[in-house]
Image 1 (cartoon, rainbow, N blue to C red):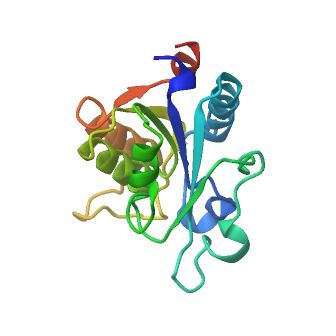
Image 2 (cartoon, rainbow, N blue to C red; image 1 turned 120 degrees about the horizontal axis):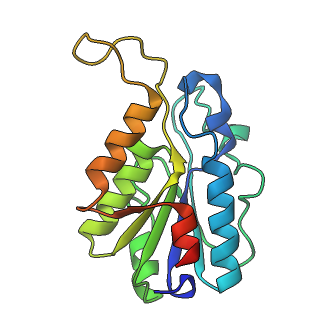
Length: 185
């Protein structure tokens, strides 16, 4: 299916994720890959939707100025923005109804962070019956500054967190694909 027939959902590519509170990060090329995918979908005439997390937690990096989209990810006229305060872009928004009304048949999802809002939105999209391609190299994860894992052992690295999240999505909830492959068709 050509990019012109797909809907790109960009999740939480916001300035607040530049805050060091999130810890170490993997994939420093995520935003560049997402920008390339965004440009390709726009050029092909595909649909682009933006999701923004508006935190309700006091002092959150995803409130106030940190809620703004990163440079280059500002919506073009006619591109919808869905604002949420939970991990799924489908909860408390009109995303599902709007996708159905538009006749969306295939989704491409990317953004921040892989194990949280990207994963939750991808899982819900698939459970709602939408075929999903996950642009895994246009996503990133953070360690959240954890030194110890949930079991008392060492905390996983940001790359391990990212890979595990993608691994659990691929083949069941989405097809994980490289950005270059999505652009090439």
